[in-house]
Length: 292
Image 1: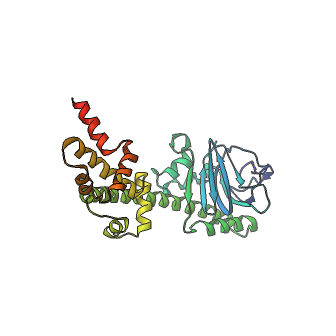
Image 2: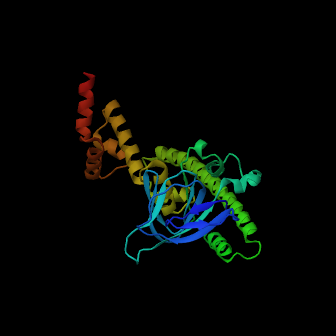
Image 3: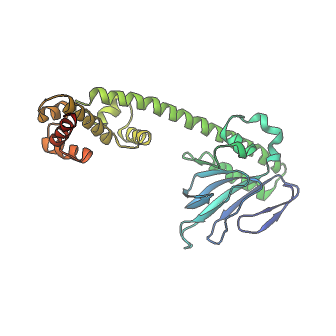
């Protein structure tokens, strides 16, 4: 790499002949926040801690990966100053110029591409990936080995692996977009199912089986998409329908409760009051008074 690179711990590394720098750093509380005039890809190899990046503090553990564009202020620190709480970070540092001739190998409209080549135009100030299947762990270990051992052709291997790393990150982007799309389509179907069957005794297991998902996976997807649990959403739908019936009909309250799926009147009254702040009778009376 041309010139010098200031290492995260404050040491200076000089190597005017290399374009890519790779290290393995045991982070500490003495490391200060810093910015770069180069691109950095950091991977949490061991332990846990926090990533202080711009105005956020992000908990990190093994498998977390960050693409940190030029000019981004950040620092990694372990979760505790005690020696038994370690945080090991692999860093791949490079100047954009090293990839100038390889632009055509990357997808130009990806967030990864823009964060490397055009950070000022990228809406994301940095990128954060979670390596759930250890896709990148071996890559960083190999890159570190190549950099430290410097066998014949190591610089070519580092360049090739850096390009591979960026391409794989673009695949991660595509996979996440696809999963979000699938989750959104599934959510629409689930909501339609609930609104069509809320009068029945439907459960998480019932609905997850209908969509060929495990109950735990279904619940995670549903809460991620709606912000509430399946049970809370079902209760909201039922109470909303109850309110409509209380306002538009003279049907006895116990019959309305039965119609929306509740046979236990004590539970129904407690739930209605929790959701609306009043009893079903008070709700109906309040609405009637407004109409007078």
